Length: 378
View 1 (tube, rainbow, N blue to C red):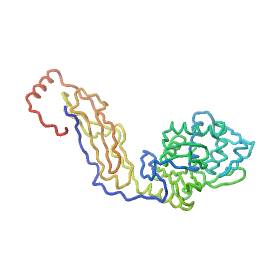
View 2 (view 1 turned 60 degrees about the horizontal axis):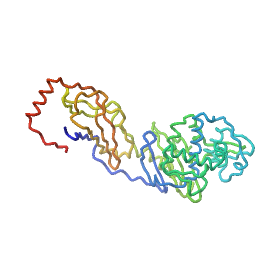
View 3 (view 1 turned 60 degrees about the vertical axis):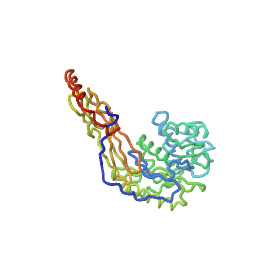
View 4 (view 1 turned 120 degrees about the vertical axis):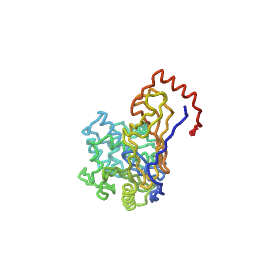
């Protein structure tokens, strides 16, 4: 039995060098929403001070509690003097009043209200510090590996950290799990305490297909944005940070989100159930068995990187009979230029019965009388 049998399949033409994508942002990432593939990154896994973009974590915890049934969108939260006095961007909550969870979410997303975040933290966890501990527990649970939180607001603190990649992961989680609250992220204005405020997200109302998410800014870290948009059934997540002005954020968000849709493409190479090759069978009533995938094999990459894709079918062979339909027998390895190799299990597409006892004896005699051939795959 050979150690490995591999079949190489060329799926596309010769690879071309991908057009350079660059940004003036200090940190950046573009992610394909459907697959989670990172399409472009610049310091994408480096922890940074995310400013108010970290309010997405505060929002995610609220939505998680709604999903669990611990609270509802109509649950009233009390406003403390501490929340009322909080500086920075505000929803303009009034002390000794109550506000529903749904309105607080609007105040956090549209107004970037630090006061609204404090109301949420105090009513859920008792204090801002206790809520920050909850944020860190959830960050670990949700796989946000480069994140650490010290407050619910995003106000400057060297221990308040997220990477662009973590912000993209969190955005994807929020959009996947809480469809009833999508509308809040797309609101362009919100009025509270008779004060109307406009959403600072530059993509809303400017970029066709923008769905929203969150902005951030401090003097120390510059201007940032988390954006989600959809065109022609495809969604892209964009995170930019470290831009020098609000105008620069607006221009770069529009430019990079345009690149996210025009320079990157999705190609499905194999559908679930596709037969991708066949494997030799030893002592079976058939000499080979077809192999199929159960999962879709799809890539979203720079449009030139999709050229030069290769698939390698690898299995331990010949496979001894009997072979059961659906039995996992190997892997299909897909590779792209400058991309990590991906593996997909392959399964027997049909059953192959073993030879009868007398047929096996004949096969054994034939093997004894046949000179061995060198193994090209060792």
